[in-house]
Image (cartoon, rainbow, N blue to C red; front, side, top):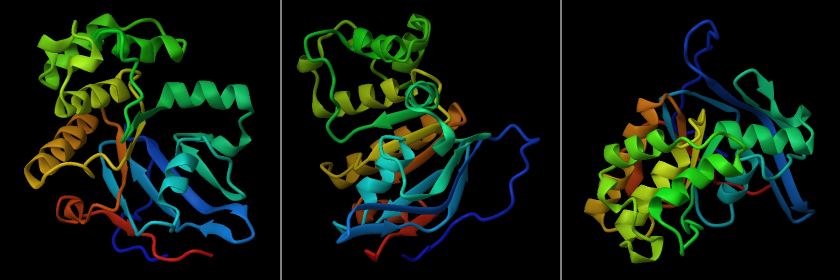
Length: 230
């Protein structure tokens, strides 16, 4: 794997920034499907792009960062927590408190309103329901008039904005986006990226985008190219 560009400066935890650090990370499904990842780090408010062809481990890296897979070796530190030391119950709680996801397929509850989908993010993480935060995020993302609509009544672009709002509901430190622009035309590709990056920056969340969409290479300078399967 080759790092095209990155930020490797040492980080001082006395600042207000929140650091996510990956070191020596490896994963194996079996003897023929093994992945080794370059070391990298990202702090709050920054965006990192993970690029590569199909089969080089992009989705696996996203699942590792999202603490849905346990690495074969290496570590993922989020803030001052070394996540591979957490037990399963602690891991689930930590994920809910600190990581937001923007899925390619949004996995909304289709029969309830936009507002309910947003506050359910609080409910499933065991937090109090942040109704005012849901309204504020909706206003920020231009979907405040859609809050009482059922999800199934929304357009694709509207669902994308709801997905971003939901990812930010629990005030995460790290936001992971899986192919957020893959099915969009050039104009909407840039709009959705800007919407996602700007709103993560406002809440000081680090943003990692995993994609094969080369159009994003011109929008994000901090990139990692995954190009080898071990």
